[in-house]
Length: 91
Image (tube, rainbow, N blue to C red; front, side, top):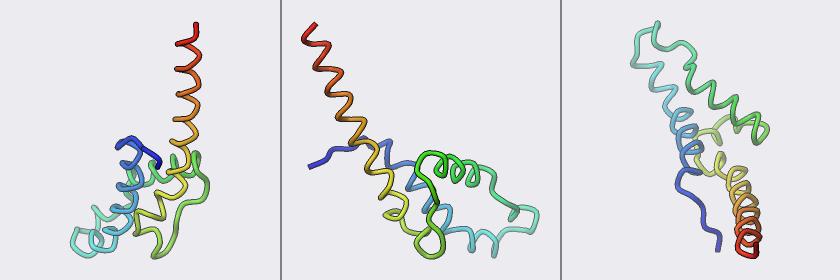
């Protein structure tokens, strides 16, 4: 069983939620508010840098599509942290 930090879920949850609500935002907000969401775009750019291509279409509305690549990274980091802690204990 893999244990992940809660913070690792924040980016995938935000991106899925933001992608899913964009059509609703465009429908209910005045035109000057429905411009490109700079926060959403900056986090998508961050995602692209870290994990590669961003989910598109209907899959972009699902947290699991964003979470899948991100779920692999903390496991690798967690294993590295355990090795580092083990080395410190031996010193």
